[in-house]
Length: 287
Image (tube, rainbow, N blue to C red; front, side):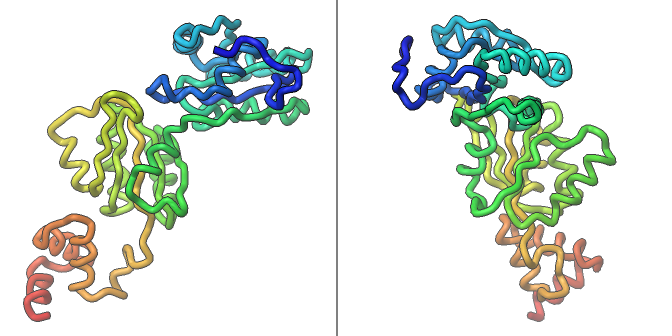
């Protein structure tokens, strides 16, 4: 492990600098050499959970002063960290896992640094959102990160309605005890779409289920979700929800391409068009 630094080295630790240091999201081997160097050589480490981060540093063989910085104490802890940075101390900010500032209060500390002209840099590494979208099998040319949905029903629905028109893949984070509700809420607003359900990324029990929202709801109807989830939902297709531009046969094929059998696809088409199932059956027979 690196314990000394060359003053002429490009990556020398700068006093008064805030370092956002990415840590593993599961597999400890994903820590980078640069992250190790920064964690070893900064003056102190600010952590979302000092217990978890203390264990991480211990496993890495690093002894460092830890200060607590998380959502509930950020208004008090943030200014104290800024004061130390302005006094010339260097600080590494780490989250429970992954890259700080992504769906955590790290972004607030960065804004506070900007206000006080404190320099900030990032030590890149593991990020659950990017890891999940890269193995989702869905479109990666454009994607939107939503993170955790609001808890309140009204705000949750408004957020999903806004996301429903996105053309790129949409990334959600979710805890196991809310997964079933979230899948149902998404399909209620989006309609049925392809989804990649990524669980326990980089860990021993890593699992990726590539399916549709309706099939995902069926999968979890008989089992309880376990672990942390990243959901990648297919973006809105140009033809999606614009049935007037599609023949009934094309409409049925649309659902079959998403993995539905022919009978299920015809039932969905009948529901979309607000007609009886018999009308769709007849149209398919006469086509």
